[in-house]
Image 1 (cartoon, rainbow, N blue to C red):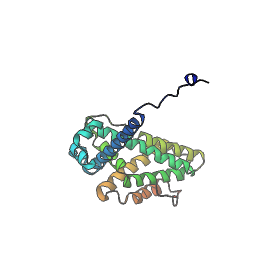
Image 2 (image 1 turned 120 degrees about the vertical axis):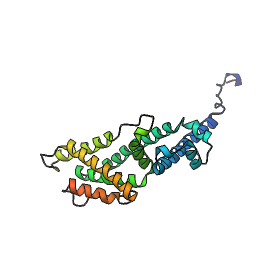
Image 3 (image 1 turned 90 degrees about the vertical axis):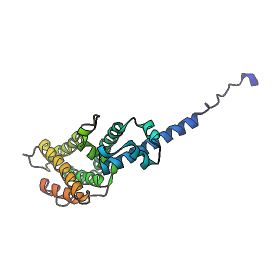
Image 4 (image 1 turned 30 degrees about the vertical axis):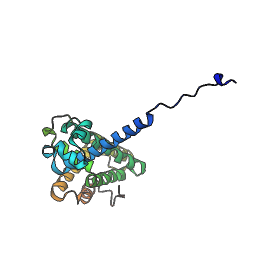
Length: 219
């Protein structure tokens, strides 16, 4: 084959790697800004936080923060959305553990309590929901997904004979979710959530007495 007849190999597009690196840096920067905003919102609340506060926590300029998020409201929405993306991940891990349904409910409550105690994004998301009337933006609708997860497990528990035939999984699910979120709020205000897992144990013992000692694993 003549040299002129050989198929030409297309050279890699110039600048493709720099573009990829730039995109990766942008993603990391957004995550850094989101983490800083969550820290600020969790500790001080939405009204008291400024974009400058977030910039100072990241070590960036205020302009760099504005480049990724148009305003404080956009940051609040992003943090709240991340909060509601993390809760289903906890449910998924519990599901994968293969526990009996009632045991899985207890484990889900325990792991969620540990996340509220330890995860700044979740702490910030919970506080932002409380302060939603002060935020000029629409936050995700609260509680629905978590209530659905609890109710599904309770329904499975009833089918498996782990709950009395008279038990209504939807009602018990709403009661457990209300108790959990009320308890985490009390624990936050009184003890910075340090005693939250103990308080959640009280909920489980009162609402699901058939569980003597839930198999809690550290999340």
